[in-house]
Image (cartoon, rainbow over all chains, first blue to last red; front, side):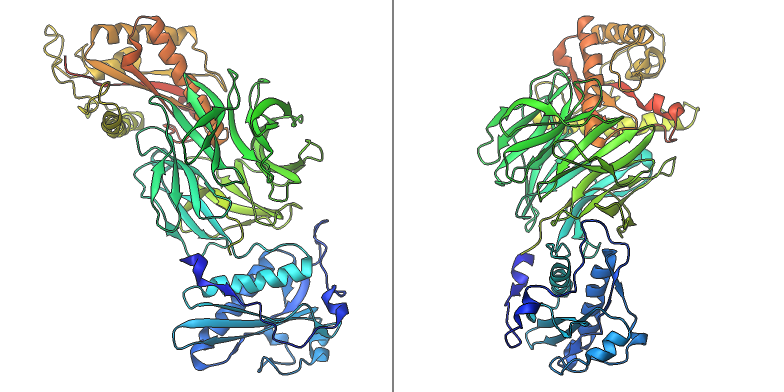
Length: 441
Length: 183
């Protein structure tokens, strides 16, 4: 249903833009080096175009602002500082009033609610100091229930125009919701918006569930569950919450499933006779192929975005390290050589980096390295950080952080790949094993 | 199990028993040839044991409770290791002897890891440990068809502190006895 809620009209609301504005003016954040000084922007409450839109107009503007400030790249100027107000979507903007409060970007928007409950949101983004629009005005149509998605779409467009990167706000996260004490922890699969809103539970808490992953189109989830009594891989349809177990032999244990970019192939770990290796399976036929064949532990596989290679962890050298092999197996190449142990590699959606968990000197870190193992950078450090997952645009990593001791609990954090903007994601209770969806359509 | 009075660990064992009962019931659904759904600690048909103790009680050498408490149901492991030290080889010799004497029972060997590791690696490590116990028991004559392994990785710690005193207890493989096919 969610995928049908929103249709992008891409309506041109204004006359043709000056060419200079279309190619990008001075308003630009280069985020490759990490941003020290966030860009100040003004985002007045959107204009309610009819009475039914009054509350939504305010809420949508707030979510747009939260998305932008949540990146650490933007700073919102409080409305108390405003000299001008935006009272009409089509009135000319008094740029001098916004320059006076040093708003480099200005967002103006308007919301109308139709008699059938449909919602239309228009917005414009202004480069205040250039005195012109940045990009074209856009309109998004959706439903009242889906208003947060519309807000995320607006914020994605603003983020994208100013940074030149793809957005990531209109995305979801599947994770494991946790309750109960450490020795009787209850786990169930849950899905939420990237910012923690709209939580939906997908399984009950009768069986342990672990490490879910989205399909490339976000419509299915692979995960491991003990519901049969033994760890086994399931595939769930997100819309219907229907699930089925992937075929496995009696007595074997299967876990750590991830989709290939084709959406039909699953790569996973299978344990037989105490030995864990990596296999791939055609999800439709159930035909499985063994990709590694060693007495060591091989697990946590992750496909490259082009589907040609698989990064995984192995303790064949004596400790957990990262290796890359072809999509059909073959001799792997070790890529991690630093001090400590490396696990849970995840290939970035841009293809350029691999995120991982590192254990060194009794601490856990989330880090990134290039695909040849060079330029390793550790982004976090704590008692226990693990299991990175990439934002759809490859700029942010979400992961599990667990506190120590008898009352230790897990929660979700995110961090920019520059190592900045570490923050906890709001969840109702404990949470672990996040997996970020692709950008929704 | 109520007659034990040494606190938390026993509560934990009790909890494990309950969990095992559901595991076995489910296992029975998928493999009726090897495990029935009589549940843990059923001790059905154990009969008298020559007046040594009440049937089914911890003092009855034929009871799963005796196996658990007197013989010892678990093996502990060093960090990242799955090899069985001589101390625990003795425990496993006792387990093997018991299993060969009490042929009505089957066992699930549960492998575990401490929290100092990534989730999926620990699942594989727990499987390695459970398998090491299984192989040892088979080498001592227990029929492989009576043994099944499962790994919980770091999902089911019994000791909760975050230091070696607890970790050493959590790096374990526990042999959980249940009634098998009725003889």
